[in-house]
Image 1 (tube, rainbow, N blue to C red):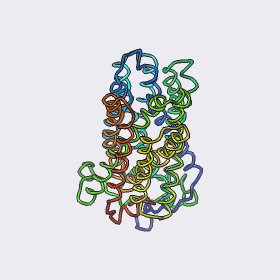
Image 2 (tube, helix red, strand yellow):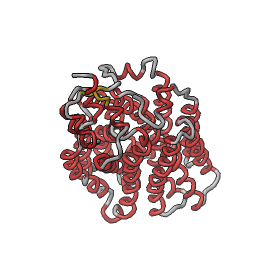
Image 3 (cartoon, one colour):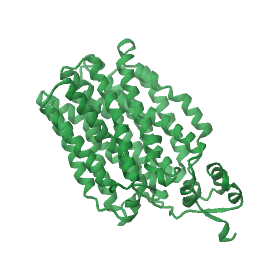
Image 4 (cartoon, rainbow, N blue to C red):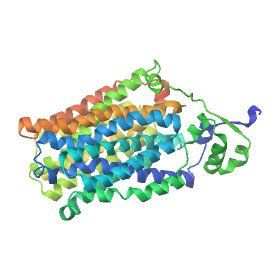
Length: 449
């Protein structure tokens, strides 16, 4: 076939308008990540109910949150190699079904510390697929000029909304129906999964990389209907290279410094984030807040995190400054704000600081995820995002446990805020020091291909 009929997938996607199909798929990913965020954060609302009946020390209570993150670690680090080889769609669906089944089993059979943690670990294996693969999918579908904003609306909005939803269920339903209602409500993801089965296509860039041109022609005709006649007899190419050893590619000379910097940053930020969200309801109640007010702080952080992430994404898309520098600014502000809780305890101040912590500390993490996806080629992009969130989840696992241990050792909350604020500030310095190569500099606003 002549070169005139050979189509570059990246160029075609870059020139596409945001079509109804883009919006439909964005809504699906938003709903998927909503249940991810909901399930990730609801253990924070379980602690208050089971701590005394199960006779838990603060460090054990922290492990209630960490147990699911351990499963997330394995799911996030392992799914990328599967998705890069066998496809984004099937891997995402498998993760959804794992979460569906284990969430329902948690509501029915988690009757002790051991059974709860075991079921949360297994649920985490599925959760480790949803957020990173949702990020990858969006970045392989959205026009590059709106990459960050599309990812924030398509992935982060759902995840943040899920965290808010968990807080609302925690405040209004758990007092009447017990903590198990959190997981019965979470099982509503089952009807969504059936819709995903019927509607979600494979990633166009994955189809191109695997030479599945018949499927790709049909999908591209839906993404750019004005060019469907051209696609009918075309072959497709992509500048991305397929690789079998994705971990070696992430640590190749071209990507090594970027990968290691991203991984260390994610470790620190997720330590801070999960230490904060896992304990903020309980700690605020200990600081004199009411039950409803203490539980509402978790929802507040998730709401402001989306606003903070969207603001940062818009600045990155418009080239206001290199993305690593903007990330560093967000985390420094958030870290200082959390540290200030050591010195002041009032309702208004607590409210303001928690809002800033969500806006800056969690909001910047959403943009780091997208920055990571943009930094790598299609052949190992899912692995890149999976490794970032997998290594980061080591910090996320340690966060709630260490925060509980610090409370156990000190008998107060000061060490909690020093640890969380310090981790955010160090993360800012690490990512801010990144000498971004040309490929990744452009990735702040568009996938590098």
